[in-house]
Image 1 (tube, one colour):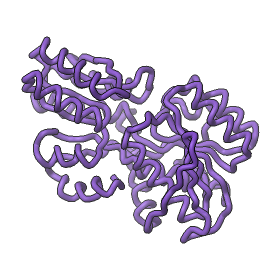
Image 2 (cartoon, helix red, strand yellow):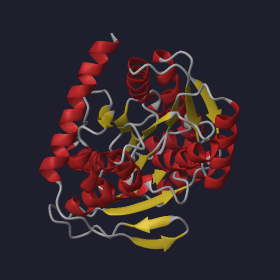
Image 3 (tube, one colour):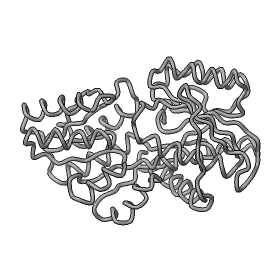
Length: 334
């Protein structure tokens, strides 16, 4: 059954990537409006002038460069389709739910939201549905998006991604991986580590405070100094991978490092052999497809995915393809 699921979702990944390749053009900017919100300024786009207003609401922790790529993809779609994109974020689940409610009250045409804490957001998503505002989910909540009332989902299958990473670790002889969770309560991060453990049973989890780089380095340095049997470190975000490199250096750890997600620095570290590989969920595609899906739903009543999630990953980045991907990572579109 898993193989069938993977094959079906693999086809959806291809469809997502092809859609981006056919539709993308030069990017537009965004203007900070304060209070955690950005105005997309997407009216007068290259492909349409729809006049729709779309709210994109995430659990972004300020300073995490991962979300720049989400916003870049979303803004490109907004520019293409003449959409006014309103971006807001808060890592606190209750405050994210309030942002969704604020979007409903402002009578936006559509909402794209992450579902890192689906139970906390379920009421707000239901309220959007009751107000006849279509909601699509992206990035997190693949197993819960239908339950809370979102119409579509764009992102990686985190269990599959974790399993794929764990299999590569096991195949290379890894015995004791350490999986680093940087945000408490995130269903996506928990699923990644669970997937790794399913293929590398000795995997151990450690919780760190991803909002404080120095605290991450300190926690990992202490753990690596105390347990020299750790031979693989699995970080769940590129900034955390950079912290892990510092901890490995100061603790004298000989472990190998892999990471989920990608930024310019992590991509360069793959090129330089400091990181073995990245499991990339292609966040630019997630932002682009979430906004595009709302546009098509509002304009034509389209439902993308055939009742299932549209996968943007896992996509592996390693020495075999880093030369092709590095320029896009530096540009912020990968």
